[in-house]
Image (cartoon, rainbow, N blue to C red; front, side, top):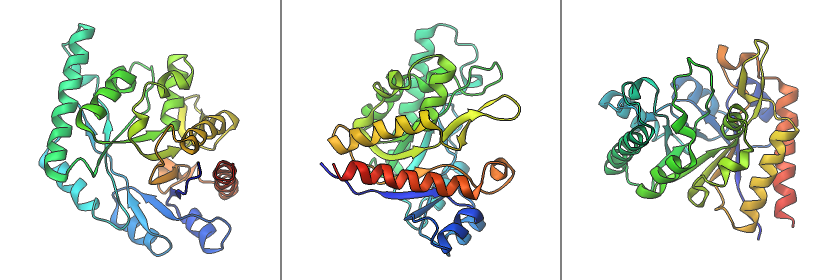
Length: 275
């Protein structure tokens, strides 16, 4: 089985320059909900917007939903993304593991039902988030539990945005194989695939959205093989999440790294589609 898939990268001026000079070939830019960045990116390639909406933590309100809905109409945006991210603070006072799990599932279901009511399940997609074991990390461990993620997605029949960098980061923090998480995630409802490297930064903190290393590529190649074999649906886009604009990304937006990674991703896709 062969598949065709669009390739995107995080928008940055560095990436746009590489595209303009035909150094890299991509189909789309992935942008945050930022008007200036969207306008800049659209001068080079079509854009899909990836927002920062969190669900499962009792923070869904009209202002956030309005912003989310406004940017969801931009350009090539197909999926309205929601990060499955129950927070530690939102579960304060609930001690029993079973009660915490039940509470998270109920809140996720409630939020997703509301999003579906407004926009239909054919546009809503849930993304898995990263997780760190440090004491001050705001997202609860249940956010990366395969049973929780699968129940939230399957019970509401929404799409699933699989972030492989987030999977690898969570697996490293948990001391398990990434496929122990992946094999339990709702990949039968895959609609987007996000990839990025995971590495320790200069301060010693584990980070995603880093340059891809060999272990990162091994997971990506495994995912592409599952898509080719038909075990997973073909996603609407594969997004390389290296680089970006602003202080958060400026120290990890190297043009040589970006060129190398885009070319390797294109090669990995070509190898699978030629089999």
